[in-house]
Image (cartoon, rainbow, N blue to C red; front, side):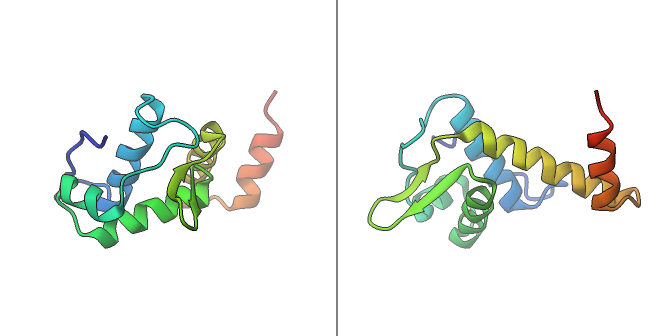
Length: 115
């Protein structure tokens, strides 16, 4: 798991790169729904980042619905990872829209107008 490298001087923040690596591993089937992720400290050591960077990434993925935190079970892949992917894309769409001066309401209106 996490056979990826982070680019310290890349455009994307480190935690977003870590989140992308986790998403990639889930999509590649390396971790299935219900499967546990390694501890954040272990993932951080493999990627060469601070554990807080990994924790920020997994919290982001939890908020997207990709991961679940369960007491006594650690971090597991949610049963519906596709939902998390759609949420992540929606977040990215809103970020792009804000960059170009559009509001959330504008984006919703655009989506509602699609066939």
